[in-house]
Image 1 (spheres, each protein chain N blue to C red):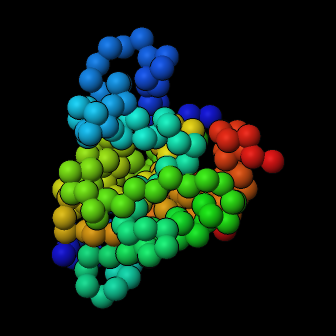
Image 2: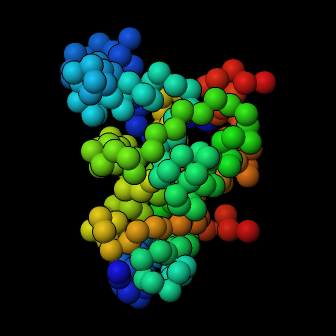
Length: 79
Length: 135
């Protein structure tokens, strides 16, 4: 388990000028969805973007977070 | 599509001589990493999942099965719930912390979110066609 505010602050720290939304999907603080919009993703493939997010949450992904659904956008990509 | 991630050294053409590139399964005297390397190169589409295609044990694995089977391509699935050693090893092999994981044509494609988005944009069809010659 990990607090959504903590996940959000870690992601904001990791990415420059980032818009971050974190949703607790199950109410159990271990299944999350994160929406991240940052210029850091510009020109990067999805797989690279997801790797960047996993790297930012490396410790959390080892146990506290069981599932993480990702939506990763560069500015202007979000429909 | 271009580089989607880590390139797998193919045992048949690999110049490097290492245990990891032999593709030998544990039953054949290889280690688990070698076994994974062998699996992803021997089969066009490989899905490391929780459960089986008939009885997926997690929503993300279920979604991955549904998408892949909708293309009618042969699917080689590995139930990591029945193999704790491989469950850890596949995360290391792909440098990816979550399950399911999808390999196409020996290349790591990503997890269920990436599969879903590539399915929606039509990219997945291109990748499968490219790797399998599916019409």
